[in-house]
Amino acid sequence: MLDSNQFNVITRFIILSFGSFLSAAQDATSQVLVKLSEVLKVGFKVGQKVVYPNHGIGTIEQIEQKQIGAIALPFYTLRLAATNSLVLVPVSNANEVGLRRPITSSECDVLFKALSSDFATPPNDWKDRFKDFSDKMRTGNIFEVAEVLKHLSYLSQIKPLSFREQRMFERSRYLVVSELAAVCRQPECNIEPRVDDALERACSRHDQRPNGRVRAAVAGAH
Image (cartoon, rainbow, N blue to C red; front, side, top):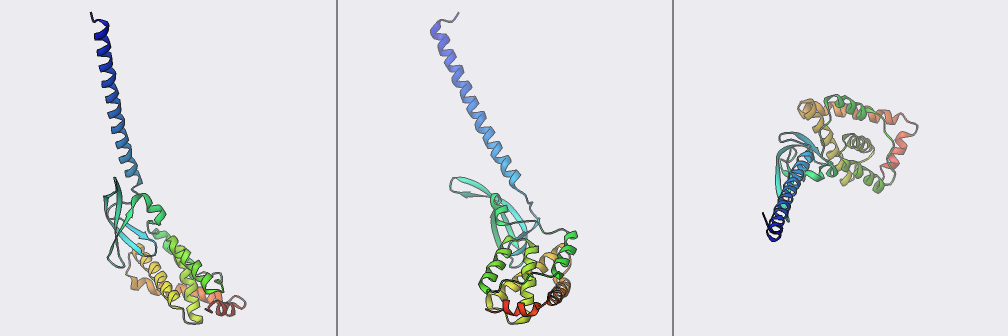
């Protein structure tokens, strides 16, 4: 039989040991949950093509851990097709950055139709217009980019674009052409005439509006 002192010692030992076991189990569970949450956040796979806003098509080359202070965070290593440069995108911020999958093959026809449709006359003040276009470009939404391309394509027929608008025109055209080429699996030289033809039809439709060309001339002033 154990006396009271021996019983108390054994009891404290069991409690301390069991408490340590629970603590270790909780730590292990927390680590598993952290790893699981990181895995769930990884929306893209190595080798997958993605679209990076304002830069176009890229390929996920790695998903690697980077030490940020005391925390290791997963990053996408993205190879951009336009410049062959590498970009690191935090997995947890991919949605905020606007990283997305390219459009589907069925959406290509929708995009061509959008490129050939009429559009609203852009703001008269070039500063307001440029801000509006810049906001659309930053979304990374290719249909928003297509709207910018249509507007600038039309304005370029009225008068020479400013330096900044010319650069935006070239960037929006590249983004549309490169994504269509990647999804349709065709060279860009095959896509460019189709894009230009769609833009011509959009401009023609806009000209058919009452006083359309007059309003565009005013909008082109800067």
